[in-house]
Length: 311
Image (tube, rainbow, N blue to C red; front, side):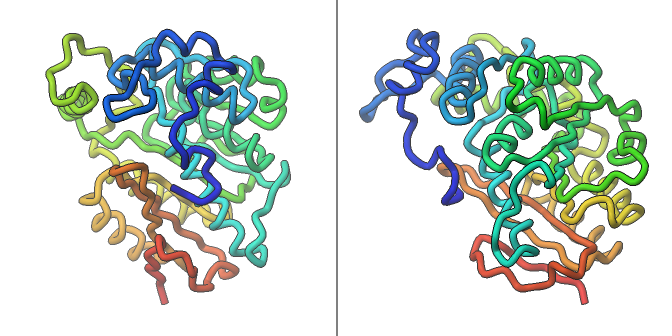
């Protein structure tokens, strides 16, 4: 994990329980020592998230509707820390902090996780967008329930499911950064198979007794063409508005998606694009980032970065 990530060490369950007493009922001995929870239990995972957000990020109230995406807090924090490093390249390696830094979160979801972490860690302002009206309503309720964070967060409904930046950004509005965790499956069947695999893995290889889709709603899990099609639309729209963001970024779930994404980036020709590899335990994920700003041509020294520069 990133050196600034607060979750590099094992979970401190005694401290988390002090912060969030309802977590205690889900904590049990770990087979190889220490304590853990049943990560196949959606209520346990949601309660752990609530404790982590309260203890580490000062979030006094957090909840999500049944069936909505319950995000892994450590990996979401990792994304923001690596994105902060991208911004630092244009500021003599000093991370820009405070509300002057405006971040666009594509697909904020009901969990509103990136704005809640990012406002605490860096003081950034966030605009979150989502195609699900109820998710936007719920996210805005979280903003109101956490006024320290909420003063820097606005969530907007995206009326067009096929658009990324269109319809949602105000005239003249600009951002330092855009982030996104796109739906990575291409169909409902593929999403269901992925949920089954996840639950089976979390259950130690045993088939789940019940299938509780705590991994996300349909719009959070799949779209036509999967993550490749979504990110290709994002790339095309970014080229039409190259000054909208200093850095455009997105998570890419599947290694096999990268060639098609690279081809599209090569076609539209940003000044620079790159892949940042992230690790959480044995799980690997990646951020693809691109910019049209000539201020970001310096070669990064971070060994986790694969540089793919145009020109």
